[in-house]
Image (cartoon, rainbow, N blue to C red; front, side, top):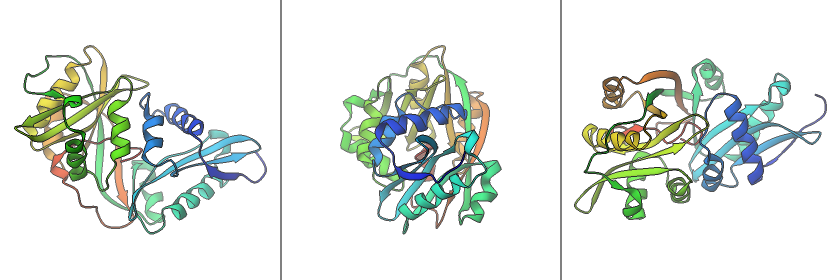
Length: 279
């Protein structure tokens, strides 16, 4: 490959290309992730194009003026080692200038991102299990919960407001969500969505381990006989204990990194990460 690539914002169709690349990398994206991701920040996706061919992708989603998240950083195999990816990376970093930037890196790339100015704060582990069982009686479908309460709870567990993304996430084809309500108070909720392989749970947020397990049980009961994946953060020990109780199998590990300090969020309520691509 020769020539000078053009870096430009992604179109909606380009995001589909990025998701296909992610699938080839074995990241197992959700079937509707492209639509939901793009809804989060249509101006936060970039592609590198060379001689009319797309050769690299990256997302640099800005959730607020001082917080952004990087993902979908992929160079097609035949274009690697030529500096094209670094040019796209620098463009994304410039786009998020002034932000505390987060990302989930594979362990093998941790040192590379440290050299780029990121610091490691904790590890996350993807677990695999098999759906089935009986849905508990004390859960409600998220469709019956006031959306305002859902986004208010989400904001406790995520560094920035993301109403548009959450609306798309909850309404995505095949997605199912459950919550636990105490009187007028939402005490936890979770979503499960169909992926290239099986399903993924995320987010899974709850006031306590018991509530998280109730929601987890409802989500897994909704997909009998299907495989599922759950991404658990190391700081929430109760989430790790839940994975052990249900004999989930460890798939791989990532590291959460930021360019600045750890954002303010209630880590003990995070029993499942929304996605490694957008945080």
